[in-house]
Length: 517
Image (cartoon, rainbow, N blue to C red):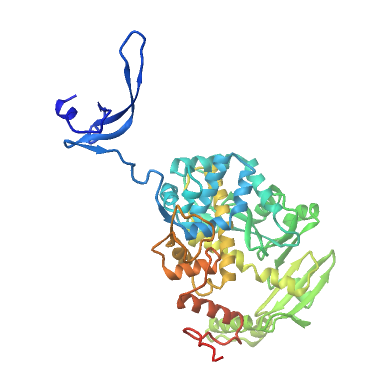
């Protein structure tokens, strides 16, 4: 030990030790914490922990490393929103697999929602940046850990089936299940699930098919399954019904889907029904005079006409005509003629403009039949979000098992997103702002980690340089307590309310006048 190091003034009852590491911590200072008596020998001192270092000719006390327990503030708003809407997903995951893998899947789904387009290599960064890492510490979401998670879940069909069963048990009796699918681009060269679909051949890319079951009333995805991209739609429907043991609900399908393809599944499940649109040249439409409407559909302002007819074998036809859509179709038809007008053909086509006819095996009120199919735009919106806004359209893994496993996590992320969209629609925010804008606003709401209470007060301590309008959005979504203060958010809510109630007068700006009494 160099003499000049030993002579540096330091606290009493200490000793200088030389560490192996080079740099400012090379000469450590340990406290003497006791003495060990040795029979027949001299007492031996007992050294304690490092209390400082000798550096640049002086004693420097040891201090805690920065952020030794993690960041003292994190992004709070979007994480709190996603966490609140997803508690039962975590419960179902914990009920079917090891806790480490369950929490990794759940946390990954939260991060996919909070940070649209996030890749596996960036998950750890987002995990540490948001309150997700504070609420669920010690979860490994690194790239290698996520690849292992995807592969293991993809290899275990029993786990995936158990999760689907748990989600299906949560479906309320009487709710309608919509079953549909989407194509997802996957140009990987090492997995067998990637195959040229009909649409893929046109575009020159390969796809995988993801089939979904969607609860119409709750407006959320329930379960899903991955199929090769060149899988025929009808066989995918059949396999999806059987694999997930779907026994009740109404399957809402595309034009041209033949119910005969799933007749066995329908016969074995008396509570499982279908409703499917017919092509306009289907002979059953004319044979049953479905264009001779018998009534006006209640509950619609645009004068929708309907007709309902029973068929042999317990099936029913439902036809509807929307005059607004009819006018649009007629104008588009005439624009395409380029002067070659034929009144006979025009009269024949004109009868079909704005019409749609459904075939079903269940006896419904006409208004219910129309509502079931007209609400299908909800799942189409989810599909568009699934492909674009949440940026899950291109697979981020390499083999069959990891593709299947990633889609399992994507299912959870999509389910959480559905719930968030529903809350935002009901709050009135979504009518004036996009989902992405709201998510950005909420992600900008930061909070100190030592103030992690649920529904903190809008004016409480713990916020980190918050935007006032973002705090107002938190209040509207019941993520924070308090009242809306900014004119911007008050205006958003007022316009949303006037859309729902057109007769309500607009809100006057500024503070209300004091009462004269």
